[in-house]
Length: 341
Image 1 (cartoon, helix red, strand yellow):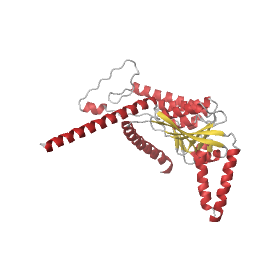
Image 2 (cartoon, one colour):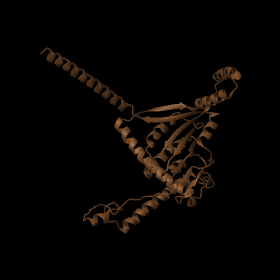
Image 3 (tube, rainbow, N blue to C red):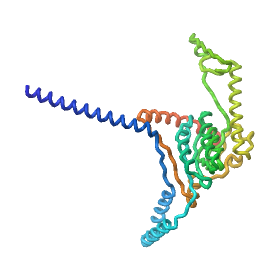
Image 4 (cartoon, rainbow, N blue to C red):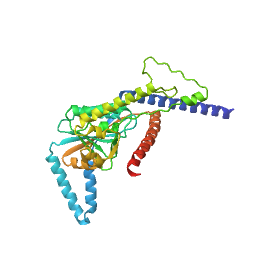
């Protein structure tokens, strides 16, 4: 009986402890979620001049003879002191990174970053965007390009650097800039529109499956996946694509007036060195080269807006990112075959 009594007492204490822990954890999660509602994300800012200087100092110090390192440290201290004493007002470069997927989902952070920068930037400053995108949905990249246009509207110089690819919607964004820099083997262009969808109507008929589609409006649906498509629907679908393509061409022409729009709007992609000849870009240069050059005369601030994400969102975004990455790699291989196969 004593053993059962002691065991029952122990069990009661254990259950009480577990319940207390669950309550405490629940309160903590509730407070965290409440705080998250008030702060959906945060702005991260890093000055890159110090990073570049530290890298230079490490190399310089490592290559000096041991007997001269003490003198180097002494001169470095004096130089740092002089900089603080004679601090001059320098222009600023605000650096943004945009890595686009099919839905241009990075525009959510881009709009926050641009809003923050526009509260402080002046015409003597500069915004640099390191852009990497093979394009995607029309409306999504239209919004992304409009966000960059906010910078131009404030008369702040905008430079876009393309190290890998700015094609289709990616180039729609890039052409907004005052200046486009591209690496020699970056892929530029693809000023065209594409749409495709499978149609299972014959397969369904083969298995005696009927599909009914009712619309109010002649062109509410043009092509469908399951219904029987008509020539009239196909013609309207193609007409819509041509209209979007013409708007795309006008957009590029308005921002890059020197280009021969009929020559460069065929959907073709050019390497950076050839894109320069077509006036699609202004200079062959990597973003690293440009930023190091600018750091000699301006303070460079990398700006990132990071959204807070729940655990389910993190898992969902990771799966979506892998799917987008697979699709973009397939598109890249398709484009590369045009040049290297």
